[in-house]
Image (cartoon, rainbow, N blue to C red; front, side, top):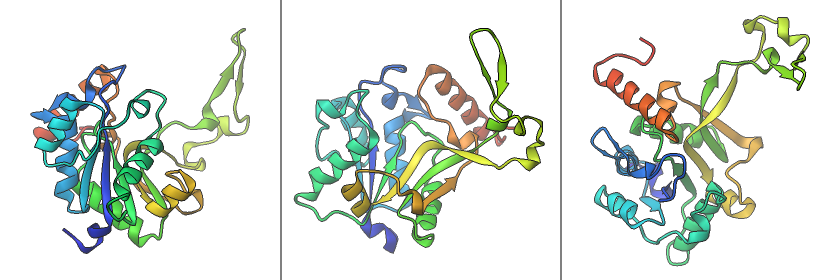
Length: 241
């Protein structure tokens, strides 16, 4: 374990009641449940003093513990619904454990349904977070579509460009944009507790990941895409080859 890991916890949210893809956190991927894969990846990174799974489900809890993670509490039902936010889950975890344990300086949210998040990604993201002086950070991927090229279309099929000037601009003249992929978030615990937010936009960092590594499994189609990429990776090919 590195010196910087002594003051950082990983929290992996994994509720049992996923709607669009049933029991997705337990789906077998590369021979193990997704939640177990996330636990092992977090542990193998060497970046965390504790790897904690927040779940309301006994089967998920069992898989997490078997993989080496902690399940020191069961998540209450009100935080296991579709309406519950990630920040609420993080606040609950830190508050539940902070009563008897000193809270860390930093907490990480690791998403179980991002199967290509690697230990190397985690180490690089934490190094960027620490060295960049950020209060918060999230993993992202590049967006290959441009708002300047988009149209609004009304009920009569009348199309108007979002940007009359941008619609004729070359791609090289437009700013590159990024979108979160959900794989990992880092935030200073003091900010999380005081502001109840995973974001300090004045000091927020971006850890950039590739399109293939950014797969987020939320539907059966996502899972099929992840398995396709896995077969490519296993055969030594890249996703775009």
